[in-house]
Image (cartoon, rainbow over all chains, first blue to last red; front, side, top):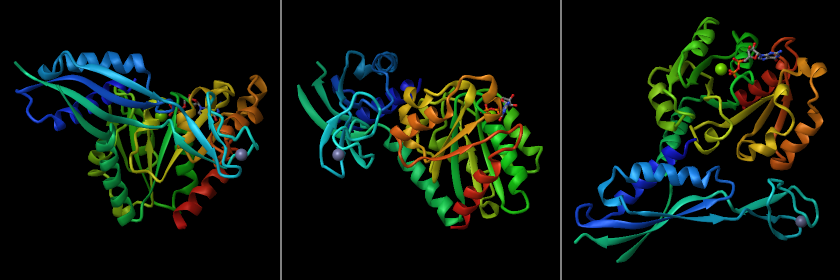
Length: 117
Length: 216
Ligand SMILES: Nc1nc2c(ncn2[C@@H]2O[C@H](COP(=O)(O)OP(=O)(O)O)[C@@H](O)[C@H]2O)c(=O)[nH]1
Ligand SMILES: [Mg+2]
Ligand SMILES: [Zn+2]
């Protein structure tokens, strides 16, 4: 539901990094999306298309979503686990004292640009 | 074709504004909480009970978020507590910028607790820091015991869980122990209260906790 606002933020960040909006077009935008980032990829794709369609240098930009697994590390036995269900407990020793290593990120990682011809 | 490396958090702008809000709260010794829940779980009712309980002891101010109306702000103002309404016009969550704008109308000098009632939604508000000290998530017994499993983000990002409408338990097949267990698997450090705004049960405990945080 907040994907529209997220898409707007992504496009704002991309535009800030574009050397010249008149001389370049964006071919692709890479974003990292954690499994626990609270984002529905289809919904983000839809929102991105809507806003990109109104942004001349981004009309053909592809949104590449890299989904990042939810990985925890046990602070007791140091075991690292890729968890499917949101149960923040070490399956090795049942400890609840765990650190989340990845899976919450929501980040623009890189863009590909091309000269306008 | 060339590649530009960016590596920036998508919501960094919101986070920066939230940090400004937080700095202002700290400078004014304001304890801010952000109350989140599905629509109708009882956020405003708990707030009304809290105000009745703490009025005269602590200075409370309220920022109300709603998609459409100012009903909740009117309910709070009726209790003699200053309330500022943010109408999001359909927006499904509050952002730090909206709270910052609303703060212009809050007398921070004369506030010890600032309660921000978020828009009723368990998904989006989890991602937006408003500058609060704690998120307080409310679930009512009518919603069943699997809410934490369906909305793990919100439970992971909250410090307090209030299980409201416990007066209705005799009529429902909601297992409160299971609800608590589900929530604690997602966030073992959650502080849990069970309340009823009808009977007043549990409001004492919740308010004592709140008082303790303010006086810390
Ligand atoms: N039985 C019962 N009803 C409640 C309780 N708390 C709130 N309600 C009712 O639930 C409805 C929604 O409450 P409200 O505080 O407006 O929820 P909000 O949307 O989360 O702010 C209202 O009709 C309240 O009277 C409770 O503890 N027990
Ligand atoms: Mg309300
Ligand atoms: Zn372990």
